[in-house]
Image (cartoon, rainbow, N blue to C red):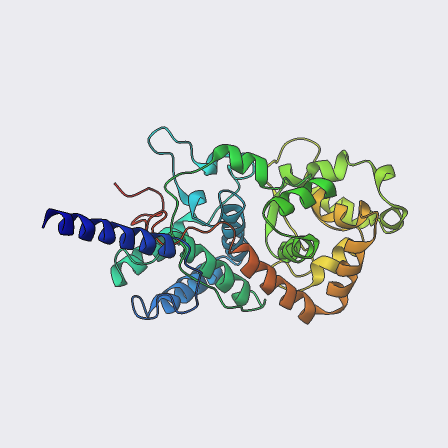
Length: 334
């Protein structure tokens, strides 16, 4: 009798291990919350619309949250965590501190979703849906957001400082950062197109105005340097002071998601050094071809951007029994 009981226990444990192994590698799916939280997308869409109508710049901020999350530990909402139990928040990292914003919008959405569907929807999934809706409401493409992510119980300040590209990054650094996440040159150029909306602080582009050595640029960008454009930037951002002054990443249509970004960098008028190096340091000409294509065909850019966003949204996601569903996006569950 004891042997039979022992065999049954062993079999049960084996079945549970098989189930856990299977569930730990679940793919993301479109209908993940169809039964457990059918009002999810409606709630998120309404709140994003309110936030963007109140402040158009918020669309770019919400999109950036998803990007900065996925590039550190994967798309797991680690970027939303405040300092806890001696673990420093990613919000304190160089690329994020006094720069990353929109956390209160996510808090409000999470509160409403928890009220409708308690302990069901992850903060990581909310970031993915919010990013898509922010782009769509700004005139950009809409894409299917695959869901089923779970939230991290840790953060990585070191990872945030290492893997998030700086505004003065070289092309070599940008390519390396994207490759580290499984993203290629096409993804780099498409996702850089998100700089068609939003603003940057003076401290992010001052070097681009005063310290960037024009002699290092290709003859193409030297030829197309626009002194009037630089004068506008100088009026916003002097050589010292006014660090928090803002300039639109796209002077022409700063709140509309379109393909003007690629026209800008063709003229050498990207706001950040990391924008202009896409062409100025493109020795092989591979990126130049993509930029020209996106500049001439907005629909192609939208299609590529949507594809790269879906691809980015799958970076090292936690599923199954990994991670948790946070009740509050700022803190791990107790």
